[in-house]
Length: 243
Length: 243
DNA sequence: CGGGTTGTTGACGTTCATCAACAATGGTGG
DNA sequence: CCACCATTGTTGATGAACGTCAACAACCCG
Figure 1 (tube, rainbow over the protein chains, first blue to last red):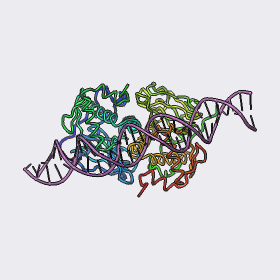
Figure 2 (cartoon, rainbow over the protein chains, first blue to last red):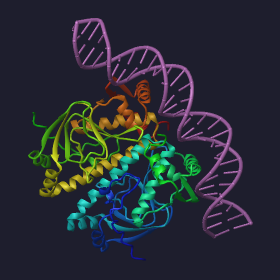
Figure 3 (cartoon, chains in turn orange, brown, purple, cyan):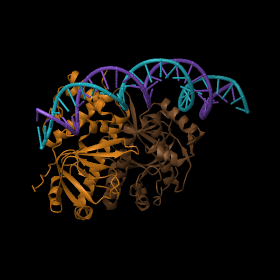
Figure 4 (cartoon, rainbow over the protein chains, first blue to last red):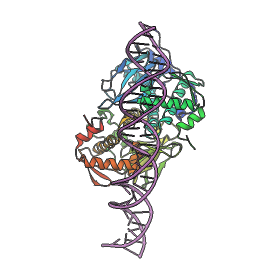
């Protein structure tokens, strides 16, 4: 099994469009912390479609994504689904004060994770006081992202939701690679996107087509989009579509 | 100016309907911590409608609500508004790793707050190592609530949103009073509720009327609701409406 | 190649938004 | 105490955005 890569803390790369402010870029723990953690971590691999845990499962382990992508989701009583987030390399999962997971997590593609038992992780936090603060920063970043998603779900129309989503993915990719990007890969399918944006897969499909026809994006393939007009897309995402 | 009351950490009062798990009840700091903080806090009062800060303002102070209620909101480019939360006694505001507020805060009624300068608060955290952990718990609770709100905004219909909202307010009230309650006060107007639930004020009005006609609630006054059938309301809120 | 899965497009329906009129409320001053 | 008026809430008629259902097309992996 390969040694999982250390995800570097990116330089303060400005997130051009998603309006997540610089200080909130602490989604990743800093590299020193990660190196220390290496000793207690255990590598785990999931194939596409495999669940990592379900909503309601007891929280046994903490994970850091090393490669691949996952989706997080909750279900309503009659089966309606809301995807509450996607996880990419460097992201943490399962850090919780709760005893039960508040959502389910499932691999979108082959995923590599570092797994830490809750106990190990707790002890590690004891030994490394700064971790507590870093965890708080992680949570604060997630919270800021969640608030933006509330604005999206509560007040944006379908086209604006798609634009926001694509720009968010672009920014996350840029944070990973550390350079400007024009292309976004979509490891999730249309239904996952729909359940993330509070739409149906048909509407997602139509809106992608609309953005394509408006020459804001180009479909490199079904699961890869090139951003053609980032400024227009950004204005659209922020609710300046018509003015 | 009156000494602000210390909000007691409620006993592990089970939140019957909102499905927020027990461990996440740490929205409030524990009483000892609060007593320590008293020495560095400064009392502030706002009248109804007064802003506490705006989105984009630099974060100068940290607040704890002592009496009254506030709303938090974000705006889109063309003025569409999403209320991202309401704050009640015991809740913290402005704790942020960011230099700018990510949302605006405005008093719904007369509000009393304890204010701490960021510096003072930072020093206080240094002197009291457990505060860091408590802050993490606060953030984790907010995050869990935000994820539930995403499910609401993404996948619930208008009646389900209203039901969830009323039960949430009921649970928060029960946590404050420490006993079972049947009645909910609504310090916010219909437009605020609408902007919180991703609806219009007309739809909010109609849905309140619908829940009243279905005998799930009773309107004590325009701004006060009695919960008549908590179980039915809870099923409705959780997406078990028709089954 | 071929069949199952996923994505796209069209026709139609439903839910909620919009617009408009009216009713209730509450604070103010006569 | 009540009349007045601004504000907020309610209700109805209509419309638009998005959901639903269905058919078809593209993709993918053996």
